[in-house]
Image (cartoon, rainbow, N blue to C red; front, side):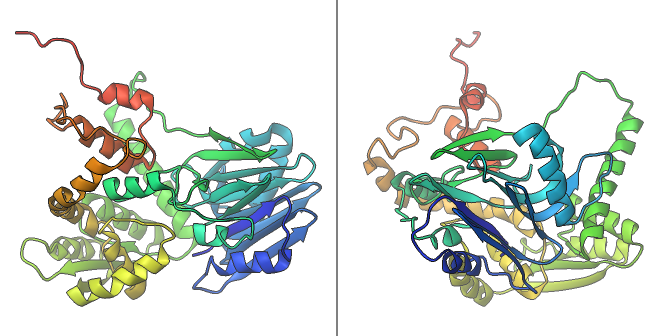
Length: 422
């Protein structure tokens, strides 16, 4: 992977060696470009492709950017990272952290204000990029992954028992926590302002839906198509790309729009399964033929799965139990794969995983109360919508948002205590 890393504060070791070690743990498999700056009480680095990283030094400000940024000044096109850094610096001087409201695209950002001795860390609205951080003795340390974070000599990673329990229960570690105690992960659409040994985490963007405005159906269709085209066009301009094609609605729509935007046959990649009832390659072929793509297929074998498991364990910086990533591994290593091939199949995998739950239940029942996120000594209550249990609804919230359900969400999910009409 690639990304940004650094610190603001004191470090006892050689800062150049520390920063080099952090960068090495954010390995970039392509042609890497490194931007590094070390000063009095700080270190900052960005590593990745030339199209995705940029740094800027302006007065007391030091900025590192990674991703594809769009600056909302009337234009929706992707700008070079160095130009994005300049926009951020100007807006930050005028408005502080509110400058982030004008930034879109996929990105990770670190801004060090040396005069105020504070760091501003942020990731994009959808959480495409990643940033983890921690505060040790008033030194702010941050990186794209936990492995790079651990390279700083002040970081002593200790397993968080609650995070370990969450992984067993949810097959993931819900954000903003991580598997390590005191190390935190930024959630989508959030920034962290770190100063004087404290982190002030704030949501700077939230998707809103306003159904009070009346629109003509035809107008909505045109707006949707225009928005979809603009998004695909921006990504197609940023770098040459193809699509992972499952033959479903999402991937087929994106494939068709990409073909329309580029005007040339696009590369499509699909994963198949040599198992009756599980293979959906026929649908991908229909879409590929319709849009006249340069189509590539690969059928996953049991040997592929066994090979991928230890490689995935090495790639991830904390436990992750989503079986569909075995498919994405094949897509990355072979440049072939179905993007949503895991989506419908994932439901079947989850159903199978539930058969393992009795084996986990004894651990859950014996877990200390401080570790257990839910009560296990009572029967699940039926949820009024859809017949799902309340506990199941909570798990869905956490799976979909990547964060624990907040009080408001739980109030919405909580079954009404009012007596049912007879």
